[in-house]
Length: 303
Ligand code: CP
Image 1 (cartoon, rainbow, N blue to C red):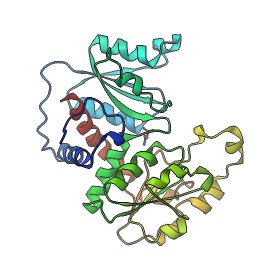
Image 2: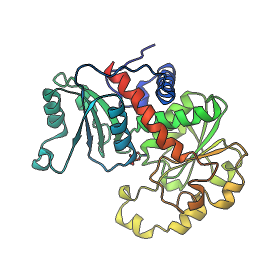
Image 3: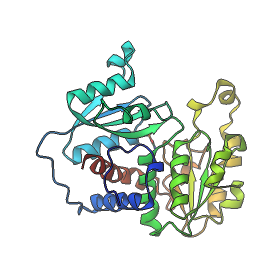
């Protein structure tokens, strides 16, 4: 089993054993038994977020600081990117300055390929989300939260509901959960479903899922990936009624079933406002687990 990888860009690269190892490390970081020794030499980590982020960006920052790394917060607006410098040349530069790990979020699908294929770039690349591609660190923290709740993934039934086609969270989670033996279902507007996902699960109307699944994972409606006409025709109330986790639907959930959402949440759209911090919700726990999942990822690429 490979414990360490040079890069962390897509869950597709990982075997079940590797992911389960990272989850064990994340749990150890959480309970204080990871045995991480603070680096004696300076290790620079740079965070480059070309798309906005609160959770991923700041939890990587917290994780890096907890691990004794020197953090460079790369300001896209004030950088030479504003003069037209490419991502490749930006990373080539940071690599030359001695940065050992670059955490990158970009709107471009698979932006990381040219970086990890380059023989001139030596630093580790950690994907903080690429377009509609992958969100592997979110996947790890989601798996950690599900594992804490249920122990095992096999025999679990998990519904991923919302804008499946545009969601990197849906893709990473569906791929990994199905590989780990969970039964994955999808729901939401059919126009936002992509048959590519049939490989990982089954689409069903939300009312056929809500009373049977162990996890209701809601996704954010991504207005930034919709065109003007779609945004103009979008009704929050209609979406909530047809596809959202309403209070009435939540009443039908199984006794031990949980609610998850990667956040940010559009309250009263994907799920009722009152459910965000309800006893069944694990949304705040997901955010807290993000720090430990990201510590495990950083350890893996730095080791
Ligand atoms: N869940 C998630 O990726 O949130 P941010 O966009 O705030 O990082």
